[in-house]
Amino acid sequence: MSGNSNGRVGIGSVESEYIRRHHTHDDLADHQCSSALVKHIKAPVHLVWSLVRRFDQPQKYKPFISRCVVQGNLEIGSLREVDVRSGLPATTSTERLELLDDDEHIFSIRIVGGDHRLKNYSSVISLHPEIIDGRPGTLVIESYVVDVPDGNTKDETCYFVEALIKCNLKSLADVSECHAVQDRTEPIECM
Image (cartoon, rainbow, N blue to C red; front, side, top):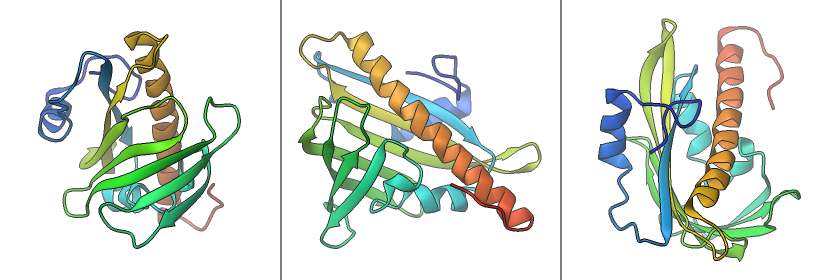
């Protein structure tokens, strides 16, 4: 498992407990890799959750997604087609909503198709309230499991996926923190 907002660094007992509770991938096969990443965001849970839970608009904080179209109603089992920005070894991804728990702040998707190498990819994101510098903050944990593509090692696959997740989590923090500042002061322009 990876830890804290800087990557592969030790994680605390609070994070470990949340990972044990919400991010255990028991069915991990030999040809798969898995990890969990942690990010502390200086914005309240409700604000961060308002971005994460938007299965229909991941591009609000995920910089590698240029467009998203949801098929049908927004419910468990719904599918979304996302277009991936150029520069990545992918063009499209078809993703299914696996879990959307507004009470516990847990969100999960599974990639079920598309033009990319992330086969059998699934992820879980959980949000947890915390106090950062005396203000409401959010502990975000994202875990994943994915097949290791032919011709790649587990380390290479984990490095690539973790780089994407770190970028998404940094963007989530930037957008959330901008909105949090906006809520405390006069309007400013956020992403």
